[in-house]
Image 1: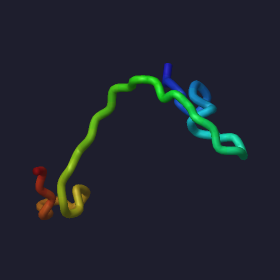
Image 2: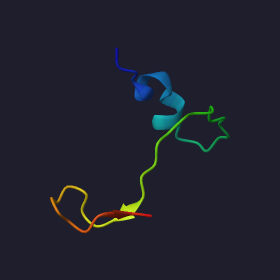
Image 3: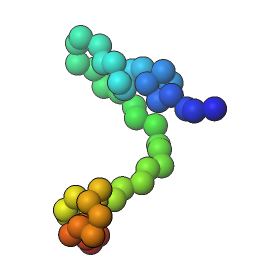
Image 4: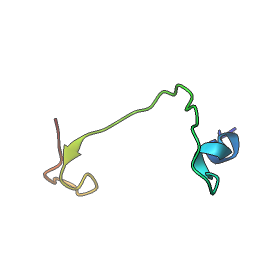
Length: 48
């Protein structure tokens, strides 16, 4: 079963019309940094 963040966290993805303070829950994430086109075979993509 796929977790749908937009359904689970509607207040984060579909904000109200007026500004308000919200609490963002702690989440795990993965980040990749680099430069170049990662889809290009034998390209210049390099990670830092």
